[in-house]
Length: 506
Image (tube, rainbow, N blue to C red; front, side, top):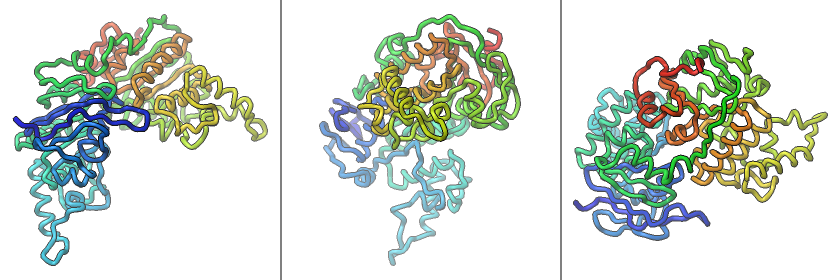
């Protein structure tokens, strides 16, 4: 069968950074072709080249076997290549029908918008997606995330999508909505639509994909029929090295209990969480998006104080009703979104590193810039931050170096407990390895680390124990020796049950 879309020998660089090198990819009509790889592997860039957002320096795009060069996304859309982005690009104040046909509304003979036809055709598209209860006149702002995604897919179909690229389509969906989305994907495949399905979720890949292509460090590792791969072989293709090299985890004797949670709840979000965390231990938290991982971290850190239960630090109950109280108790938190909550991009490295301890560096409302400079210089050496000097703006640094700045900022508070939420998200493989090494060094020095990660290899590679969350509850706690992708994945996907191993009992 002739591929509908081919990318041949595609290379792309942004300045001195090579993002894609000689990548090949093909897509056949009526198939679901999964695209996988770690963060930073080049998936997003490849998608943007296929959709006309970026232009490759080398290689060619073929559509129906013929070479094409898109001047921009509008031209690619005109050929039926449509992307459904993870961040849905809808206008909340407009109706469903208006969003579906935005930019190409049906017109009357007089050149006016044909509102009746637009509503009818929007209704037909939604019926095609099995959405009979979605009102085409409803404002998008009032829809659930799942229904907004259906509107986005209907919008793609309104442009006669022949190639539908779905970028992490289930990242923000509850499980019931995931099942409905996969049914939509199957229906579109049966109608001959060719689908590129980008996801980190192994279970979805094995359920829905016909073939899978893996990118690693901007290079295509290989394309395989889904029947010829296993979860382990896919992980190996994505990681590309022995797990012990990528995750330099040492066995460190556990010290005393640093943190204990007893029946901690945040009304409607996190329910009845109990576990302990020891000095020198890395406790990983796994779970799907929406499982309550970040909400639990923010509860411990006082961003959203617990509504019930008890938090103990070094065996003593702590009332943590604010971030300041958490810091005073010896807790630090590196947030998931470093750009919005971890750093101030426009400020220099020096001021970012000192931000959490300004009260200690200030006398009579004047900052001791000498101590601030010394702190930043030490951080640059200690964390191998690649910067010109402490005066460089943080926004000019790479993602991995920005993450190290956030780490330095919170470690300046001299915490006993460090919470890391997606510590290596958006950084390259080399920076990941450095951050993992730092985590090991910090644990060796007695720091107690609570690590949240959506990357299962990272959780398995760096954790002494794995705490699995589902729907705001604790699903299991698994020891490192028993923590396999199958065991942790089953706890993430299955219904509620009692923890497999109670953390407090250790």
